[in-house]
Length: 306
Ligand code: ATP
Image 1 (cartoon, rainbow, N blue to C red):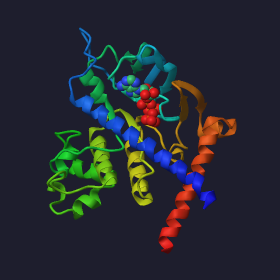
Image 2: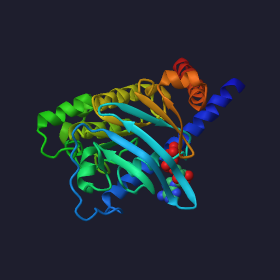
Image 3: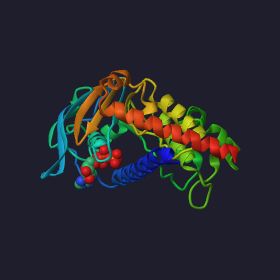
Image 4: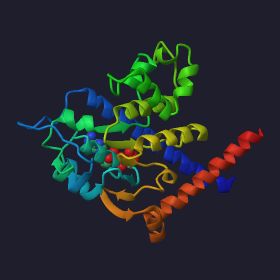
């Protein structure tokens, strides 16, 4: 029991962190619905996405100038590649995604997409090029069809079905009373967190944005749902420029580059194998998360034996 205690208390910590970032993403959507805080500059031009390369050059940021949050952050997500950001709570991961969506402007430095400063383009064109898959999605009180089609209102029925299939939510929809026309939300079908997330993934597949920001699947889901979601996320990220805010290191092992953010600075960077070999922060996060997975496995086996 004592052996179990440490991994379990760590699991509690991980869960709390996840809850917090869930709220953050919801706040982000609230902001998205409101009028933007950062207005288009006079004469702003639409963003023209050619390959979808994302680049941050010496980006620093503070909410309050007495407290720097991001310090001289530079990295690139080449077209079609996946970069993952990991780091302790409060390191600045969500802040980075808010800057990419231009909810705030960097205090210094530049963020560019295919060489165009995101500060100089129209917000509409910027947000049209970006897709986000949050951990916890708030669905509209409308049909499943509407919730998926929102990604691209002029999509055909066949395209909506194909997106649902790729997001691995088609089986669930087809077995729901009313199928695609089933209402969800307060007066309709109640969906689990994992089902809602797969609806959001289907919506993003339909929108087909060239650049994706993924807030990764959580460990609060059962392993079957988690595998389904991970499969759907892999599907949506295929061939797209993808930035993953990662909570579970096992899902980013294959990322082209992993950045470890600590107190607003990139302190380690490299592939999974390079970072494990460095025996630094990432390597210790990796070995701790193994302990958590072991504890989960023990709990699962105990539950199965009951
Ligand atoms: P987590 O993994 O817990 O979600 P994070 O790495 O995403 O953390 P951020 O949410 O980017 O971290 O927060 C970085 C720091 O900025 C934190 O210390 C936080 O308190 C602060 N912060 C975040 N949002 C605001 C805000 N709107 N105003 C002032 N400070 C903020």
